[in-house]
Image (cartoon, rainbow, N blue to C red; front, side, top):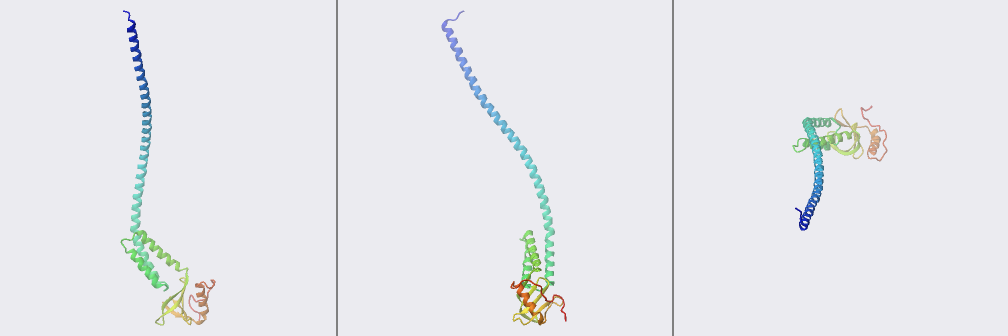
Length: 232
């Protein structure tokens, strides 16, 4: 049965409307599809980044575990060294005290005060092993430096069983000489007897030169002072 012109027009209009709806759906889907593809690409990039981070973190964890193991080993080794070092420091100070006792008697009060302060640090619970080691090494360095020093100090010594204030000339650790404050008497310390003994007046000029050198008022030169025994 043939359709009437009005029906044909209605059918045509309906087909156009259907086509438009389909086209709108296709356009909307195309837009959504493009958005979904971009989201998929973003998520895929994020997934790859997370995988990379995961692998990196696993490597970091392995590295940190290795470092922690090494730190634990070093800590144990350090504890062992500390346990062995502390008695060694005590023994070193004991030997230093004995050395000073048998050394030439110079700067006696200063050196004894240093030993007392050092022993106080070693006996302190609060002082760390690093501080104890530093103080012991410092004391040893000072004692070593004495061996290369030439100086004049004013000290009280015992002469003829009487205390007297004199000028003491120290030639490193080789010898100690004295001159009374009025300059009339000179002498030296005899390490064999442990006593101060008077020197002949013929050494007075050399003593004057020695003290001038120590005070840097004269250029360094050879001295003819008795280091060993005296010639009659």
